[in-house]
Image (cartoon, rainbow, N blue to C red; front, side, top):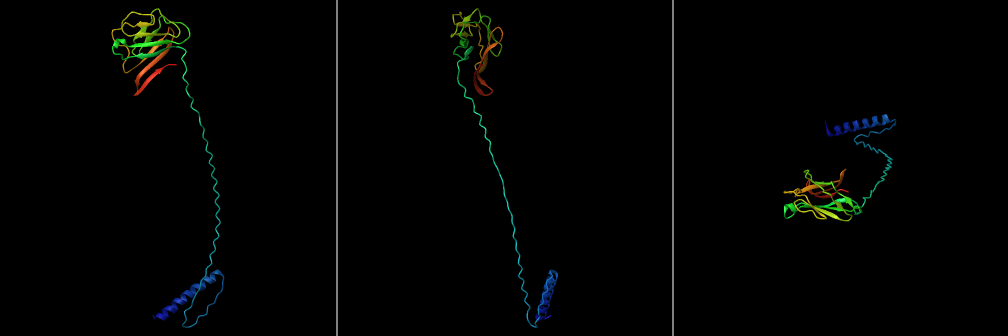
Length: 193
């Protein structure tokens, strides 16, 4: 097939397709065919898109922050009879001692009271009264009792050098507790309220 014949056939196919498109759209169009001319089909499609997209995001953030103030602890003077300190590791082991202060505002009869450690070593107070504002020292080793110094009379240590707790008890209940040393990996020195 010659080049001109191919061209003519292709032109006829294009025109036929164009006619079909026009016929299906309901439009009538006629194109004259002129010999030895190349038919020209001009398509000018007009596509109009008018998309209207309205996005109205409504995001409302209302942060609520509540601050709870941490109370400040104000040191107060203890109004009680309590263990002031335990010296558990003196130069001479039997020189270890416990100081107990009477801050109650009155004389306290401590006869029959007890002081003990965590291992249940118990010191029982002899006939003894502690005046207000005064402290008594209880030594572990032997000695002669004096006005504000008492002796446990033991021949070996009571208080653990690393950590221990002392408990002061009257005839009815525990009056005070004092712990010192390392408990669960942290340094501790606690007195009960």
